[in-house]
Length: 92
Image (cartoon, rainbow, N blue to C red):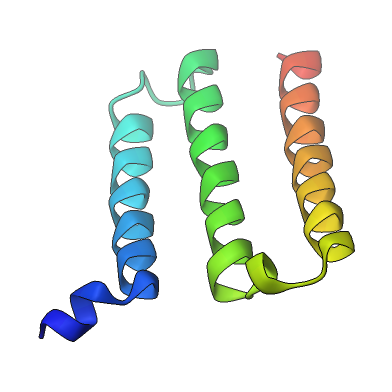
């Protein structure tokens, strides 16, 4: 049993599960239905960005990939979430 707890992937998986519950709880308690709340949106999108980084880094093995792939995936995530934040605040 302790061998499972020492595995970094199990720890990352547990962290992803915990963060998923936290983002669900934040969105659930974040305001009225059909009412935009900028704080909740920023928190949930930020959590999604961290989760995406963890999945790419640990489960897709990019942390051990060549440097160019690490830079490309980090740039892609920054561009994607920058675009999401930009669209949200431009419309809202």
